[in-house]
Amino acid sequence: MKKIFLIIFLSSLFSSLSYAGWFDKKIKIKNCYDHKKFKNFKEAKRAKATNDDFWEIDIENDKAVLSYMGLNRRVLENHVIKAKTEDYIIVTDNKLPDVHFDLKNNTLSYRYPAENINRFEKCDFD
Image (cartoon, rainbow, N blue to C red; front, side, top):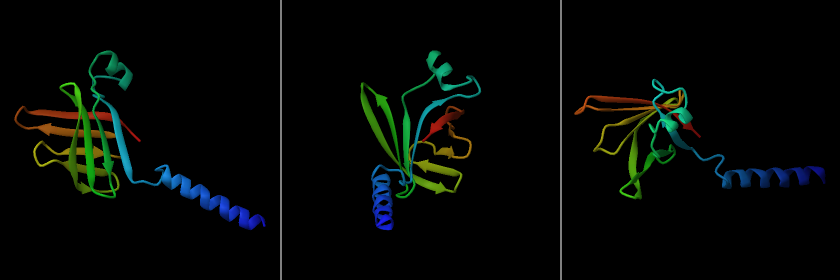
């Protein structure tokens, strides 16, 4: 009887965990800041050097979505995963420069060649 109860309990636990998204291969990236200028996100926010951008990367389906505020409304931009390894992901929308995510160091980087701007930010990866 105990074995049957244990099997039922474990199966319900795993089904609820998978329903809650615990086993999804999605990464959420938020609270990015320039770690060369600031010690942490709170310090950057106090200096008004942050934005409300965030990313959601769906590794399983090779998709990424950038979300940001633009002209008083939320904008969602779809990207595709161009390359991925266990520690690194590159996404593109085939318009703007590629965005590079370093999963090991929780950073993102991108480059605007026309303006010669390189961005390298530390972020929270969930």
